[in-house]
Length: 361
Image (cartoon, rainbow, N blue to C red; front, side):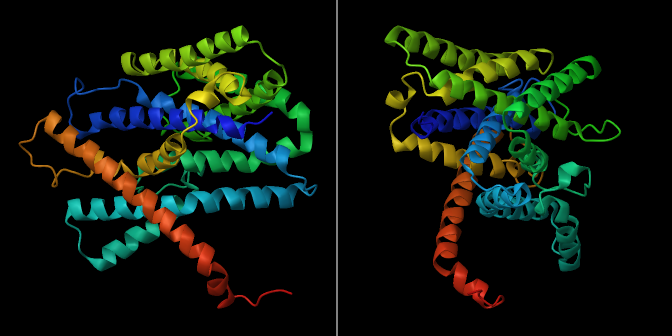
């Protein structure tokens, strides 16, 4: 089964749910609760965890390396190297906007703030080692990587039996959240041993692993045109309903319905059994998926570090227009700067490395 031809549909959906998150975060610009365009856009993060779980399992399946430790190292190194340019540029932007808004020009203070940012820069802040963070959405990256560091070697070690483990872990976490919180939100909460956002990522990645396995099984069948049409109706019905739920209902036990609808939708999308590859053939969808990551990482500062940037007499609508424009601008900046630095690394990376490390024969 070729999953690659169907990636464009997932890329388009990434963009859709990032837009929901950006609109959801606009509420932080004012103290009035009625200024909420999207009521529960944060639930869209579950989609990213689930898709990341699928991609993690696909990477494990492609790898022929038998040394689990070495394979995990290579997987994590590749993952982090892909994220790092966007991550660092977006952090730098948020850091500058924060200090500009706060009027901080003391270089000693700025230097101390950079040092305090190390847990964020090292992508480990969701371990619980937390100092001031200037780019709130990076919690997702930290949670994802910390979980992958544990789950990837388990996938390699236990192979097919891992999916039984993943199912149990997912259900236990969701059940615990249902009984304790009744919601999947409040990701900054510390439950005495781990951040809620980190364990939330565990359930999402495990769900993604199950979607990968089910999608692979689904894709092995040769479906009729009628069956493909029905599967596509279910697939996009799930996504449309989740968007409606995110826009209309606050975080509550509705989060669980969104979670399972995402699982159904992603399973079908991943299986490549519908007509998605026909509808999403254009390369623009792949670009939107790539751009959505930069938009997600770079929009945050414009929602909260603006007390001395937006004129105080501005109402919510005026702030919203500038917020969206600034988010798109910063997303494009981060995206294309990342492309530029990756090109530089591809061209000069080995030469720069040779200045410090003697090449091995």
